Amino acid sequence: MPTRPLPTKPCARCGRTITWRKAWERDWDSVRWCSDGCRRHGVTQVDRDLEDELERLLDARTRDASVCPSEAARAVAGGGSVPDDGTESWRALMEPARMAARRLVATGRAEITQGGRVVDPDHAKGPIRVRRPR
Ligand SMILES: [Zn+2]
Image (cartoon, rainbow, N blue to C red):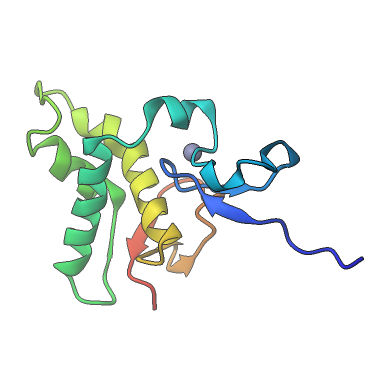
């Protein structure tokens, strides 16, 4: 019997790939989260703001330009959605900003690069850049 690749889908929060498991045989269609952590947190308004901000930043630049997730984190942290007490609260949004970037990749709206090369968003470690697909 030929083996087919298992179905996959992106996690609704972090954008990482979820791969089909036997345990999900009956409710695969309703699986949305890769982990309990993602399910508990869900997708908040701040998460959506980060995604929108990344899109806005990309649209504001030339098609070839890339943006850093920290730019979206800073913009959203300073934009009122998160209380800014003068400490660098945007840092708390860095991981959510990377998740937002992965969601854009999962829906074909962006690519994640490191050193100018497109990388697998599931496994990229260290600083990343986000750009429109080429
Ligand atoms: Zn997840």
